[in-house]
Image (cartoon, rainbow, N blue to C red; front, side, top):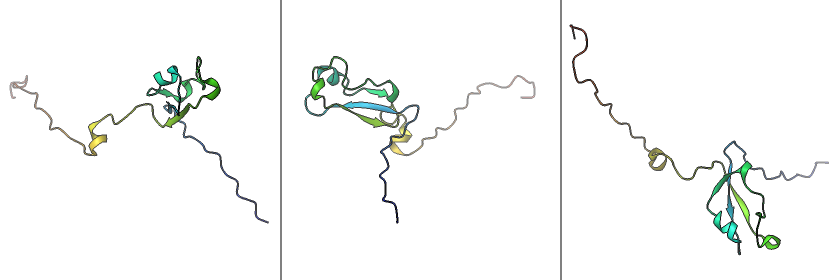
Length: 101
């Protein structure tokens, strides 16, 4: 008799730079509102509900996970998809040190 399929638990890809951002749903305390747009390394994120939360019994805060703490593209190449290669600049302005130069 075949075994019933077991559902695998949802796993988040964890890297040394895995990050989280606080997401609020509905009412949020002042501390959660202040941390709303800040990304934390996943291992350094504060526990929920936050310390000093005035809505701890009805807290609707949760973390959104990211692979990296950085936000947005860091280089033009990542934005446009095109790599720009600049021509090298000639730095030699005088003759060489040898008499035959």
